[in-house]
Length: 255
Image (cartoon, rainbow, N blue to C red; front, side, top):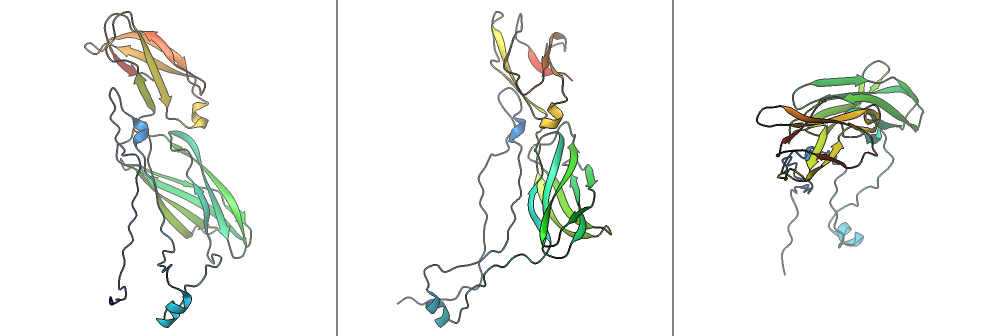
């Protein structure tokens, strides 16, 4: 008969699979591959699903207490908004198990290049034993970002005296460039048209204010602009065919 030994220590490991963050493509960057996220560990427990209550009691083990409602003020929901450049809105639901209070949100994050952004929202009335959805507009305006790097932020709940009631750290990434530009072919004959696909990495609120995107064909050897085309920037914009003329040139985008 095998001898049983009590467990003295245990380590929990989180294993995640996702995109690898590699941003180099065949002809241009793949900026949307630069992603990051946050996982919160909460109330980790160990169970013996094959042991009965009587067997646990015979070994002197007590069943784990059942979960009750949270007794402290906390965030019941958190959404940082679109992970794109431009105007966005952070939304958080403040759950208050105690008496009514006036509370607000503070959102502070540091970019991979060290730029600090801090936004303090207006105070709102959170009812007793209830919750309140709070919205905090902010702007993510860095034109370019570093690959394999993320913004580090802290969301805090503050009271009417400016004190921090509680906070949590979050990580989020952004596109390395605000546009994903793809071409149909890298080596074309003079009579062949070029297929250009553009995906703008902008939030809906910002994209609604953009009138056009300028596509320029630049001769790589001299830097001369041999063709320029202004295209409407909208969610309905489809594929655009342009003839690049004699030879093959480097594609670049203008402001």
